[in-house]
Each structure stands twice: as structure tokens, then as C-alpha cells.
Length: 367
Ligand code: NAD
Ligand code: IPM
Ligand code: MN
Image (cartoon, rainbow, N blue to C red; front, side):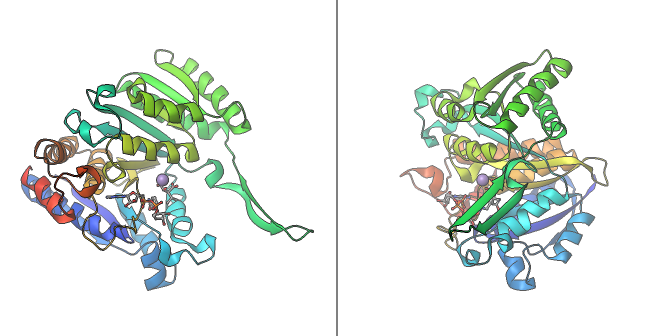
């Protein structure tokens, strides 16, 4: 069995709370499976600012470069909101990390277990078998990174801010390929989401995606949908989708919606991959919950650790090629929340709920 060499960046607020539990689950599995874990924990985000004067300390970036994968918590929150925007944890740590490793493909599985449908805000009649879709989000382009990105004062004294949405053919083609490969392993259907009735970037996106699939994946079913309709269709009939595939900001928004119809943001894990390979010849990736630092519940020991634990499973699958162990962790999570009915408050809905640690204990008991 390989040595798993990864960087652990817990971040802020609930980040460290859920990371502690995810590592406990991983340590347990490692013992069972004879895996050697070699990980180092480092400050990132607000913790980086507080302890090193910088959201992405040089030592943290260096650690990531040495590692075969990054296990990330989440960053940001009210404590650092008064800093200049460009110095805040989200913009000064998370986005630069994604960019530094060229992690352009963000995979977010929208999975609602058939025995957990009561946790979804959708009526069970609409989703009798749960939900099983995937959101592929472009992660290093679009309006997040386009330049200019500025705030200026006009001659009349009022302020004006500009963000720029930019996409090039090559950026669209490489994420289209990830969507196609993902669909090939599932229901062979891709719905590309854009706003081609308004945005130039979306007109290009739609044209490039259409041509790319016609040339390289003619056997897959490709459809296109405007983002406003997609938001509506996700709530109306999520299983009409197989692979949802979209640009950076649309994917950010739609994936939170997807998370909640699948039960909770606290259940949604993600893998961010690029072209880079790690020392094992597997994809280098950053693995993180899709949700944030949840300052509203931080410090109370009630955050749902499942998204962080499921992000560990994704790391084992993608960056270490340990599919069986990833499956085992996913099955343990499912059994705990669905079969055993052990749930944190975000998925309990009036039923008895447990805290972060007890949730992880229930998962460990199923391993
Ligand atoms: P959020 O995702 O932190 O929280 C939104 C809601 O979901 C809150 O009510 C929260 O309690 C709940 N929630 C999220 N994760 C949960 C979990 N694991 N268990 C139970 N409930 C959970 O979004 P927000 O409030 O808009 O942002 C808070 C901070 O997090 C901001 O600074 C934001 O920029 C940051 N953020 C960071 C990341 C990241 O690091 N990847 C992602 C999203 C938001
Ligand atoms: C996410 C988060 C980030 C994003 C923020 C914190 C920069 O919302 O990972 O979904 O918008 O990508
Ligand atoms: Mn988001």
C-alpha cells in the first residue's frame, strides 16, 4: 500500500472542527487497511493572516507543492471581512491555491441517498429514488479571475466597480472533456449550462462545447440550458440531469442549490483537479467541502462533518487510486445518516440530532 502524503489545511471557523473528525475517520481506515499516512497541517485563510500575516503563507504553499494532494477545510468569515477585499481569505488563499495548481475542474457530486429523501426540501414523490447527478464546474476562469477587476472613482465622484468574465476556447474544451469523461462513466448525458442569450462568453462556450462534443464525443447526449432555467429545473426535477456542466460562477451558485436538494450543504464534497500529476502518477487535487466556514454555527460542535469526510473519500479515489477504500467510507457515511438515522442538525429536521464528533463516531462504527 502506498504512503499517502498530503497537506491538511483546515482553515477557519468550522473548518478545523470538521477536519478533526475527517482525519479521525481516515486514521481509523488507515489502520484497518494498512495505509501509511504522512500529512502535515498548515494554516490557511484567516488562520494564515492571524499567525503569519498572510492568507496563503509561503510555508503553506511550499507544503502543498511537496504533497500528493491537498485536503482543504474552508476559509473566511466575519473576523477578516474588514480587510481590503484582495487580502481576505477567500481571494488571497483559496482562489490563488486553485490557480497555482491549475485546478480547473471542480467535481461536485449531487447525491441524495434513496433512504435519505426526507432530508431534502423537495417532495419525496418528486425524487422517490433520491438524486444522483454531478456538477462539473470550471474553476480557474470566468468572472472570478478575468481582468480588469477594479474599483475606481469616476470624475463625478461616484464609484464604479468592474469584474470581467473571460473564457478562451482551450479553457472551455478542457472542462468539456472532463464533463464528457464523467458522463461516459455514468448516464452518458451532459447538460451544458450558460447564458448564451446575453453573454459573449456563453455564446463562445456553447459554440465550443457543441463542436467539441460533435468531434470527440458524438455518442454522448449533449443539451444546452440557460442558467436561470437550470436553477428552476434543478428544483423541479433534478434527475433529468446526469452531468451538469458550467462556468465558474454559475457552477458556484447551482452547486449550492444542488447541495440543499440533496439534503444539506454539509453533505457536499468536492474534488478540484487539473492537469498535474502527483508523485504516484495520479491526478494532483484539492479536496474540500463545497460549503463554507459556517460562522453561524462555529464553535458549537454541531457542524456536519460529512462533506469533509466525503472529501477524504474523493481524495483517496482521485489522487491515490484507492477506489475500494473510498467506496467503503462513502458506504459508512450513508449507513450512518440514512440507515442508522444519526444526523447533525442540518439534516435532522426536528428529529433528534447529534454533534460533529458523534456523527463521525457513527461513521467510524460502520467502517
Ligand atoms: P456557508 O457555506 O459557510 O454557510 C451557509 C449556511 O450553510 C449556513 O447556515 C451554515 O451554517 C450552513 N452550513 C454550511 N456548512 C455546514 C455544515 N458542514 N454543517 C451544517 N451546516 C452547514 O456560507 P456563507 O455563510 O455564505 O459563508 C461563510 C464564510 O465561508 C464566508 O466567509 C464565505 O466566503 C466562506 N466560504 C468559504 C468556502 C471555502 O473555503 N471553500 C466556501 C463557501 C463559503
Ligand atoms: C466555493 C466557495 C468559493 C467559490 C469562495 C469561498 C471563493 O463559495 O468553493 O463554492 O466561490 O468558489
Ligand atoms: Mn460556493
